[in-house]
Length: 267
Image (cartoon, rainbow, N blue to C red; front, side, top):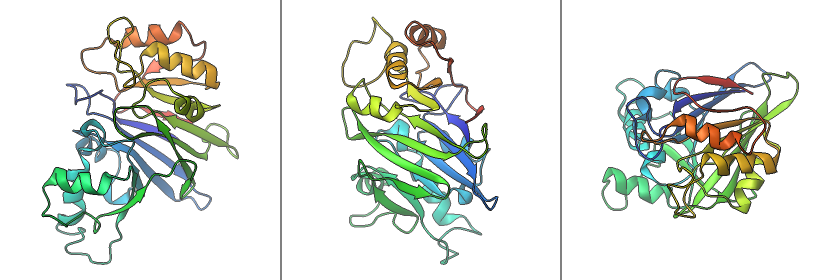
């Protein structure tokens, strides 16, 4: 299983990176490569095209409906519908891309794009609502949503698939989306091979509760949950990544780093 960081900037696109977007890929037993996109925040569709054909994406999973996690679905809709050779307007046989997300995703997307009342993007996206405790299967991936704490309905996502590092076994990626410390994020991270955790806040500066993790809080989650590796993401452009890493290292003994846009990590 391979994780590619398409975008990692927190809350808005940064000079060096789009907002949140992550590509998870793995081969099935027959050798077919499956591609799952986690979030598609503002600025990420362009970067995504550098690493995968958008028509080859097998599913999209959206953690919550804040623009830095879903805004480029509007551009993806245009791509899937109006591409002059492969778009749904010229190829009626093309199936809609499965899109997992909160219950309001279909309506919010239509409103964001300004579609006429009653019109939706169902010709391009097959909307599937997250149900905590109910897993979805996408090729070799098992996808499990876990409700987490944020000002709007939000979910972390556990993705389990074939391990690249230890062939013949499975590996689990736990992606927090946006959350503060809560029971859900501990359950999400339990024994994960990689915890991909947001760290938008800084200890002593950002005191608002119920919104984001700090590097320290992410480290505490990784320690308590027994995650083998901690990757910090969703770091705003005004933050110093070294501060987030130092906060995490103070409470977590495993490997920790802030992810880099364009880099891939093997599980």
